[in-house]
Amino acid sequence: MFSPESQVSIESGYLILTMMPSLFCAEKCPHCYLSKEQRNDKTVMSLVNIELVCNKIIDYYNSTNVKDKHIVLYWYGGEPTSMGIQYFTSAINIINRTLSPFKGYTVKHVVLTSLVNIDTEWFSFFDKYCDGYFQTSYDGRMRGKKYLEQWELRVKEAKEYGLNVGTISVVNEEMLKIGARQTIEYLTELKVSEAGFLPFMLNEQNKGKKFDRFAPTMSNWSEFMIELTKRSREMAKDGHIVPTIGQELFYFTQKFRDSAISNCAAQTLFLMPNGDLTLPDYKNGHEEYMRPFGNILNQSFKEVLFGSERITYLTKQLTRNYNQECLECPHSNYCVMEFWKENRAGDDCFGGNNYMNWLNNNNESRYGDVSRSIIN
Image 1 (tube, rainbow, N blue to C red):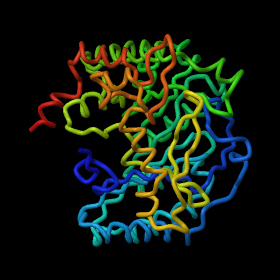
Image 2 (image 1 turned 180 degrees about the horizontal axis):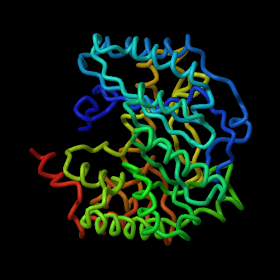
Image 3 (image 1 turned 45 degrees about the vertical axis):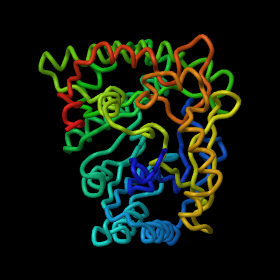
Image 4 (image 1 turned 30 degrees about the vertical axis):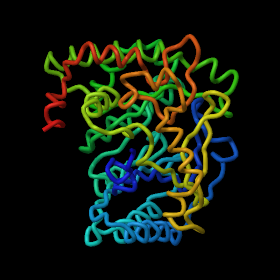
């Protein structure tokens, strides 16, 4: 029987809290799940409420026997830097002070930024509060040539400053035109330390022309990932320092772990500006939306965690949305499926089965003997 306390989950003391205290963003990215109204809204969660959220988390863990709590604050949005350094610094200081090591908490902050509209003063912020690391979106030419030129300049400046840079890409038709081999070569040249590659998902904002224009099939996604991984291994053998590929590393680390929930979102919640705790979910097949579980500002954290909405959601995750092909798939515990949904007929599944099969048949990981270190 599934026991969340025996797994890597919020209940066992591992919480990835995606921080979205503001949804404002000046960009109009084709894959964004936020509406125009949300992106234009400059409302920011108050610092008082940031502290309240932390105390609600503390109240919950004080009611458990969990001694070591690991909290990852993943600052997302919107564009999180739009809130300004003063607010951001105050928010992080409140979080670090409240969720302190003296109370058994280990806290890590990661910021995902578009990077193009920020001043270089943010580099010292990332250095001090984020262990010298940040993530940024790289999506090829999907946002235009000028955008890409600005982004590249900022990445080079960040590297010259001494920061580690990770990229998150939503694989799109413009990236397919560039090609997988050229993509990993480009990121290697920029000295990116790690790179993740997500499928392009349908939502209410990109229905129609945007989705039809930019969204590849999952079969094309898998083909892209296979070629990218092949090239990264070739380059690594030739002595290049190649970015870690997130999906490849996830496969090799999770495959040998005895966990039924490694890719079921049992560790994750998204905090919205109004205090709602949500997660991405899917309707009408594979159309993405944000599903709320409750509001931490007027409920206890425990009430949200054990409420009917989250229990229903986790049941859907653990049963793989009752997708028969997923239930029968040997890769279902470590595939790249995020937030279980219906697969498209005539296409590779959203877990990237073709890529998983290729990794399984070409398991010479360039990350060392991961299986041995996990098993031992």
